Length: 279
Image (cartoon, rainbow, N blue to C red; front, side):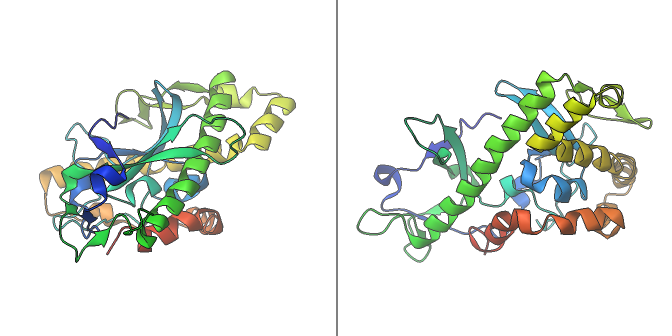
């Protein structure tokens, strides 16, 4: 996904500026999908269809919020409230984002550049808002919390890329155009059932060892959301006041168990959702 509208965080640009914590998800009203990381695969699968996209950087898993051509996110209420039972980690820290920096030397941790989205109306010159930097030029304590959030997410994103590279190398993906008669947006890919069933025990062991099998299972589970989301969006088209998308997918038996089992694995994201950027 291109991030040309984002500005690199530098003291020169933001040393004397401030940022506001977001209070509404209205800025996601026209966001119809979101890239995810492997650590949140099961919570995502408990709430949305999880499919794959092919990008310039390779294959990546995404959560689908809409299956229609309307290009409107049905999980955002008219008042900007997020209606789904789970919020993907990539959407938790506006006005901030990050992009990876190629590793150099012996660096072990994933390196990244923190970015700022100035189009959201969350950047100000008001000292009552959150400072980007201390007077010494060091990051403010609140911005350090944002950095910690992205350190966790970028590390998981690197693991996710490794997993998706394995899936691509093993030719596990096939075009996904429909599921049980329901159409899926153009350009989506899914796990080939035939290919999965033909894997040798050694190949299955490879998928298990790298964590790919978890992502495969999450994808398969998530496809159960396609039918109800299609029906809900159809009813919303004819009845704009419908609240069908407020269905709590995580209350559905085994899906709930899968999501709950991942709570500890995604704690870095959950904590950041509540404290890093939201008011």
